[in-house]
Length: 99
Image (tube, rainbow, N blue to C red):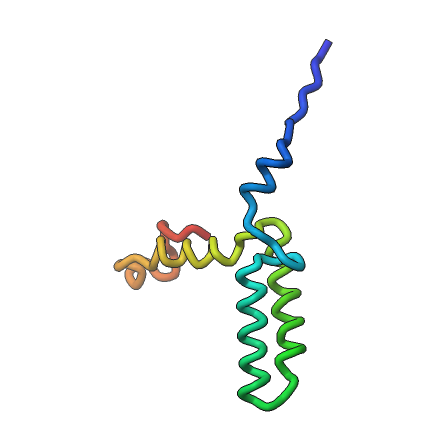
């Protein structure tokens, strides 16, 4: 007989380790999106910041479906693994590049 095993998930631990989300995206990105779009509306004297807000929000929500901290991981990986000094010799290949 084979025994069926399943992975137990502690929902409290998962909730405590995730970053805070609001409307499907990271709360920091949400408020940054609001600030940028509001400043565009004020500076340009137009309401084009509203469609920009919706487009950015949907894009960030799509990126945040699998990984809530997608943008912060990309920024950290860019600063932690910059292009190496011999990148011109090897062309577009970079063995230290994470992606």
